[in-house]
Image (cartoon, rainbow, N blue to C red; front, top):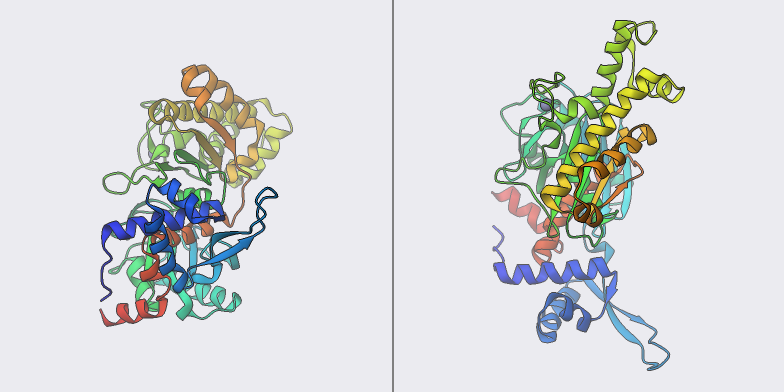
Length: 412
Ligand SMILES: [Zn+2]
């Protein structure tokens, strides 16, 4: 078994490494100012990190006034590698990244995972991981951890999924199955949380301490960063914005309740409303059952007023939800993302109007709402960040010793 690091030392390492990561390259004096430790403490901790190739000294030209070159510290990108996997109903996406979340290789496998046994899903993940690691020119021994993002209610501490629209549960959890196959530490979390981490690490949330990410897809998800950390709540289920009942007794939701935000805002909710209009004859279309979200979006863009109203209602509910977030949490940013962002102004125009109408001016001013251009790999990248977050917490125990860690797991 690995020796557990002392909590205070671990916290200091984490703060220092994270400060270097966010800055890119930074001097010891500046680190000391930011983290609030003495320069001696910073020097002591960073020298250990340098010895272990976790960080390195980078000489940059000094300012014209003083002329002397400055020695900055930067993270060695090759100090560790991790894998991120995103499992969704019709595909599995996988990335390998270095310790700075730079993508080394990626693969997307178009396979149906819904309602398959968890063992079957594990087989597919195993294949994707092996392929991706090889593509990156690495061996499994160099991988420090595997992160997996799945939809539904996930207890990240236990790695257990309580409710997922995907695979059916077996005797072992997905986390146990993957960990056992590779002898590599594995982390599982809700996919909205993983995509939120990708924003914290590389996206719009870099250096922002309090923000929310709202994902509009077939479902409606949310992830929260509070004081620079993912907020999970008392048993890991925080952020269930999608199944917050906005209109009691309203539209039927997939979760069994009525009137949830998701039932109005998600692609699935929009498609259902459009199918209803088709069946009622308001929208003259051939076959309600074979309609897709893309058909509905195309028709609304062509000016079908009844469908424009469906998107408008979705946007208003979204604005209502975001206004509630602003009032409750006072975030400095809300990032709206997901493939539902394709609807553009059909949704975001009414969303912005509703936000302005329903939010106190002081809170409105504090929060910037941005729509993040959708990138499919964000999901898998986020799952990789789930591992990186753990690595940064005890870097000397984990990054340097991926191989030793694997031996320890094998011996357990
Ligand atoms: Zn619901």
